[in-house]
Amino acid sequence: MSPLLDIPSASPSRAREGSNAPPPDHPVIPPRKLGVLLINLGTPDGPDTRSVRRYLAEFLSDRRVVELPAIAWQPILRGVILRTRPRKSAHAYKQVWRDDGSPLAAITRAQSVALQGAWGSEVVVDWAMRYGRPAIAERLHALKDQGCERILLAPLYPQYCAATTATANDKAFAALAGMRWQPAIRTLPPYHDDPAYIDALKTTIEGGLAALPFQPDAIVASFHGMPKRTLQLGDPYHCHCQKTARLLSEALGRELVVAFQSRFGPAKWLGPATDEELVRLAREGKKRVAIFAPGFSADCLETLEELSIRGRESFVAAGGTDFAYLPCLNDSAPGVAMLKTILTRELAGWRNAP
Image (cartoon, rainbow, N blue to C red; front, top):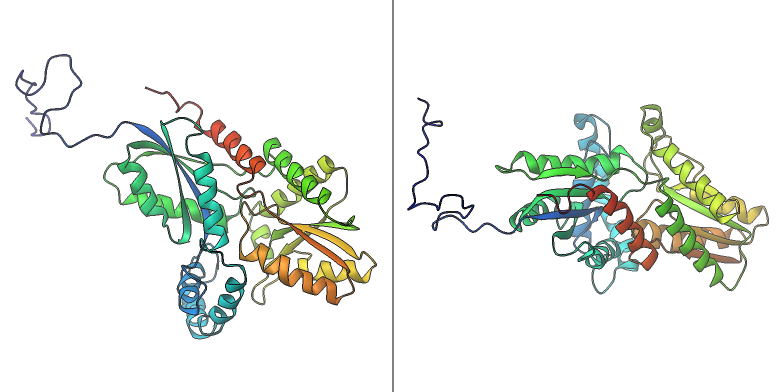
């Protein structure tokens, strides 16, 4: 008989008949729980050149982000980009860095804290970054150690993109590959057209507009840019962004100018470009503009520095007079309520399961 099958029956000295209690020498088993891991893009550890260089090296080495053969890309990355870009990016980070760290990390942590206890003690909420810290693998192990045998991975990207949603899931799956006892896993689908998401955006934007000392001539919805070839390769990101903008425009009852920011390198990118649209609007006589970034679940360098600071400068230099950046959903009451709604849906069937 195989040794694996030659298992003696339990004796009264080892376990009571009909009892689920482990033997006295068994390792401690934590109570069974569910886990929710909020995942965002990432951030350097500090606004200094060395930290930014380390962060960019990880970020720009991801084959989901830069879809070029490593043999062609790595010499460019190591030889030119990582020698020049970190200093410039560190200066940008210093302009938005908070006492509690980078805005993206601080806000994602606040979202996690706000959701803690939303489903009772059986659900543990944690957070991680795809690049930088806290690392996805680290937090997955932490959730497992707390008894989470089922974990919902929640990349906080409303619009699906391989360079954001997919790479976050990739990193989690890679961590699972090294686990002896893997938890069961679900992943949060894109929520670009979810009524709860559109309603939360509508509520926060209307509140932001009502607080302005001027009436905008135009409202710009700025999404993060992606190379145009991603659309041609079948990535749904562009379509998701357009649908979000259309549904939100209908909900607000006014037209939105859709644009894409954060171009990098010589490749053709999704357009029109946000910086160029701001200049165009000012030159066409739309002197008062409000801008927001519906694709970001939390404010970060790309919103607070690129849009709120540099976007304002470009607009005013082109003749604009009034400019307002409207914050992301962040850990606002509408934003947290929206996250609770969509996460509750994905936890269905798991909660109170035997």
